[in-house]
Image 1 (cartoon, rainbow, N blue to C red):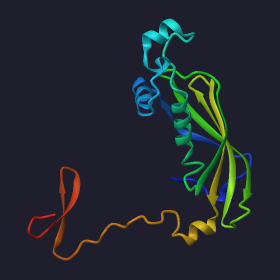
Image 2: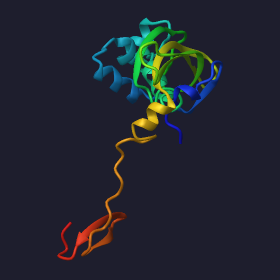
Image 3: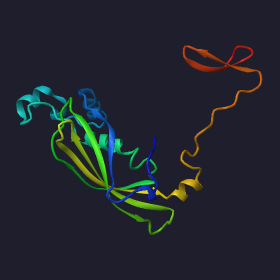
Image 4: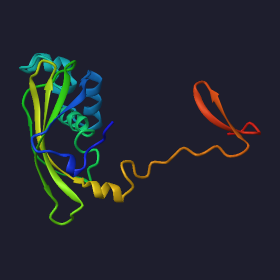
Length: 190
């Protein structure tokens, strides 16, 4: 599975359809609200939302939808990013409700080499999120600094720093305990 792209792999006009989608649960929404201290009753209080809003039910907090779409885009867009430089615009176009499934896609709008360092580039993208019925719910544009292929190669390749499994040392055996492989020494210790 690809995780991000180098500068050379981005093509202006390319569209990346992020998969899979995510069905938003009440738990997801409430946990995000609590973690970010957004206690607005529109998101947290079903009775309030039912009786005092035009929606008649809780609305998923917009920053969760944005965060979800941003996360969905990482394997296709920013998995190799050196830096996220800017969110140029963010619009919440329609509400998301508990039980809606969010899908996303990203279009490459522009790319250019960095002016200060020739081993990286800046890619501008637009990500759109929509519900299971095709309703557009969120659109944002951002700029990401990504490495060139030479940058990745010079720093150890696709997975720099990833450890390799240790080779078994003499006097040890590999045993299986409840589906988990463990190494034990000849005294029965780990």
